[in-house]
Amino acid sequence: MRIPSPRKALIGVLAVAIVAALGGPAGAGGKAPAEVPGFDGDTINLGVITPLSGRVSVIGNPLTAGNEMWWEYYNEEEGGIAGKYPVELLQEDSAYAPPTAVQAYDKIKGDVVAFQQVLGTQVTQALLPKMQADQAVAAPATLDATWVHNPNLVPVGAPYQVEAINALDYYVNNGGEGTKVCALAQDDEFGEAGLEGLAAAKKALKLKTGPSPRFRTGEDLTAQIQELADADCEAVLVVATAADASAIMTTSVSLNFEPRYVALAPFWLPLFKDSANISEFMVEHLWVAAGQFVAWGDSTIPGMDQFIERQETYAPDQAPDPYFVFGYLQGQAMAQVLERAVKNGDLSRAGVLKAVSQVKKLTFDGLDDDYKYGAAAKRNPPRATAVLGIDPANVVGLTIVAPQTASAGAKKFKIE
Image (cartoon, rainbow, N blue to C red; front, side):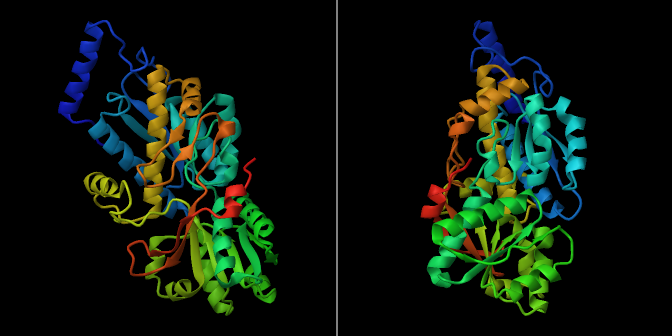
């Protein structure tokens, strides 16, 4: 990661010296934070537990690159937290496996103030008991609604359940009324979140539903997709990561099964647009629901010009990728939490946990909707999501079919 420029470092040193000489506080809130695990009085360390290898590294690597780019920008141009505490990321490979993630957490928990990223619904579930016991804070790279009211977590974006409700609302109101809607879902917590969205949509829209077979990532999907075909499913909600996307599409082609597929955000990778064997099928039959999608380079989006300028400066080799944008948004969110913690003069685990509850609203310069924070029980995430079609000519392979919209069902969805 980049370090602050000599000029900025000198300015920071002089500022602290001047304040100290005047007898004033070294920190914005009245005192400089004490040294604690993960903070040596100068640098703040944050942990990252993500799949850097294996099937899901296609998501973990660009997402982590987005985390890195945010902090390189923030350290260089803003001087770090409170203008004087640069942030470093300590990364560990989870391989998208809960046992491996637990080992990674135990390895670095004493060396970090908080966790900038924990990727995966099942991984986050596995780590939560430890985080709660340790008073640790983490930003989940997963959109399950179950994170919304958890005080140890710093979620961003509309939940998976809301993505599903909004996308199915669009489907029903654009030619899908009265058709049979089924699902194909991972047999884990991520899959369960998507099926919760289907259940809420069924209630709100009075859907006619069919089977919802589950699967383990990486397994042969012939039996599950044949079940959907035999049930004459006209639309299928897909709750799967990009690791299984190609298999789902190619198996559907081989079985001549052509429903309207509606997938949640983790299903898509930009490289799919160049895949000759499935891109044509995807163009005809796939929509992707996304809660924080912004068209890469679209200057009409507030904050996009700044984002592109920072990407060109700090990550010039990064290809356009929605996961990279998500990692950047995570960095923005954590910066707002840490700014509050430093203002309080407390970067301990308990101090960061307290700061999360004191942030009233997370904002993202227009790249995503604001997220109401405050006490965990009162949090309210964005309720608007977009429906995207496949366009191989687009830099990320996606085009907006329906812009960010919050359906009546999404607005009423109660998050426990």
